[in-house]
Image (cartoon, rainbow, N blue to C red):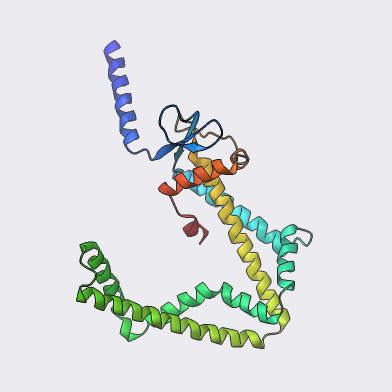
Length: 262
């Protein structure tokens, strides 16, 4: 029986060592006055372990972000006595027609660029666009000199593609501006309000998602499977220097807020 216990203990220890090989995370060390300090002995008084949240925790953060977005969009759109509703209406009402048009055009710059890129890629001239990008990637990975004539020709083609995309985006902007100028101010305000509501929702999603991801990432220093905080509000109540330190370390392991937002 004793031998069996020793074997079991050995297996447990081996599994623990094996799991540590795949553990991603690191400590943050704090001095007595709350500053982040190096890990050298004697310079820190407290520490926490920061690790990337697991898939279930990431899904939970996504759901919390989506819920925050829904709440803000609902309040901004329908709750006439909410701060969100008042902020959206105050912003839009302060714009005359010229500035309303400029706001709408600037807010959709990314969409126009994507549309322009798709339009240019439909041209026969760019049938080999993927080959061009593959060639540039291979050239960079090879470590060849940048003054190589072959590299120069690839760069020239890439610059030409970017120029055509920019020109096409400018054409789309002109068309959109002409259409906006023909619209009544009331219609412009309605579209601007919808856009501001969407932006407010997207911002709320990112804030909530990042807060929950950081909450899940902070672990007990001696037990890396145990969360340090019982509630996300406890993490949010911590000093900003602490939250920034957690965000900086977490970004080393995961940087997907933009993808999650989309």
